[in-house]
Amino acid sequence: MVVSKRPRILLAVALTCAIVFFTFQSRDALADSRQPNLSPDRIPPGSRPQDGDSKTGSDAEQTYKLPSSAQLVAESFRLPWADSFRDHFEAVTRLKNVTMAEAKATCTWAFEDAVDFQYDNNVDWVVHERSDEEIGARRKEWQAFVDGQMIPWEMVKDKFEGRGIVVLAGNHDTTMRLKVVLRRLKVLDSSIPVEVHYWDDELSQDTMDELASMYQPMTFNDLSQGHNIIKVKKDGLFINYQLKSAALVNSKFAEFLLLDSDNIPVIDPEFLFNSAVYQEYHSVFWPDIARSRPQNPAWAITNTPCRMDEYEQESGQMLVDKRRYWYHLQLAAWLNNEHGSYYNEFLLGDKDMFRFAWHALKTDYGRPRKWLTSVGVENDGYYCGHSFAQHHPDDGRIAFMHGGLVKSVALEVMRWNKEEKGGYFRHYKRAPTDEDPAHNVRVGIKFDGAKYWPGRPEDTKVAMCTDMEDVPARDLEEILPGWEKAYEEIGGFWQLEQDAKAKAEKAKADGAAADAKGGA
Image (tube, rainbow, N blue to C red; front, side):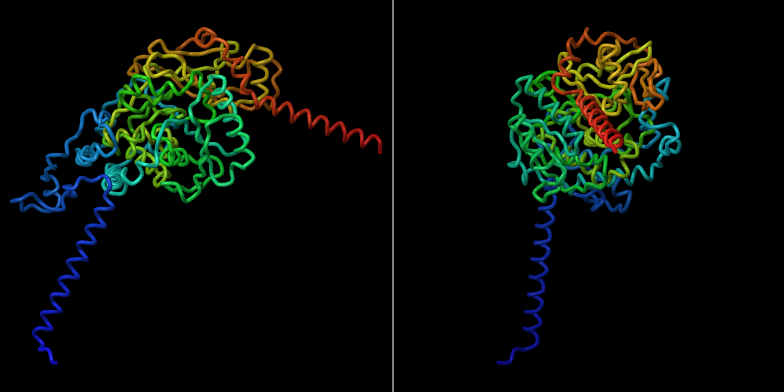
């Protein structure tokens, strides 16, 4: 049978239309599946004008109206779960952009040089402010990530449960420090689960077995393996800040306490989840000793005017409810992982990635009532702070002793303090205004060459110390009696023990070599 040309043409047109229709339907369905945090009625800014509006380009973007459901939530921390933030995020991405001039204008300290000691005055971003063009480009990057690149909560919500400690370990030193933490948890009779994250072969099976024998319940997670929700690369031999944020996203816990391996709990950390601050905000960020400079690009990039009532974040400990802040944690990890080479220039690793992720998403975080206390030693009027005492969010009790600079001290100076001066945890400095975060205290980093030590070796290593310059040092027994002994009993001075053992073995070997030489 011969079919005329006209019906064949009509049939071809019909088939073509059907193919196009189903192709676009499939494309739209696929696009919807990749928009985990978007409301169904979301429209990219400027993608189409409002009805009756003939403007195009930038004018159309300026006149675009938010959907009625997308309103900024003033107290967004009260939103009950991760996907409750979707409309709030929509409004966040439509906020008026903050310029560098506007961002820094809100911080007017009288002694700016004492505000932030993390960077010298001659670093590039301090000397030459980042342009608004650069700021705008970086802002658009994270907004695009929030707009449609994050992993949907619905896809992962069943992977998380319970509460626990998340800690990273791997090399010999971090493993030794973790053992101190585990012994302390045993002393406190704590039952909080511990999850140890590591990279590839950094932890041997024997080491994992040893750690597990010291404390239970304990589990391990290899961040290099494909089962992790987000993947990262370990691209350096020493500091890999991206592993910390990746560990939090990949952790099995729905609520976690992030803990550095050199941070010793003073009280049972499990009770911190019951604090009033955590129960209200479902997060607690502890403060560092310094503030962020007004010209720090992170303020403007996150559309946040500089804050004079806020310290930098000290992320040696952090409480977060992942069920509520799943997307916030993803943004922090994205800043640290995908764009770490840029943001680490002015955010010093992972610690402030979390704070500015919360700022970007216009969400308040919980803070402890008290600022940190510096802990260290004073010799002949020279104070060297080597640890931070961080406090319970509600009542100001010391909750953690974070020995951030203990690991860098000259061991002979530590031993001299213990054996000749009565201890290495002897003094503290606490600002009289430690409950007023808007009050500025002159702080800084200095370098201890141990010149107060009579007969010190000429090759004594110089160590970093923190100081509160206008605050007198006091006896640590006033606020934390018996800590020196408690720290020693859990093996806190393992460095001294290893050093003494190494010296004894060397002396023995040298003696044997001398005997052999004499016998010959």
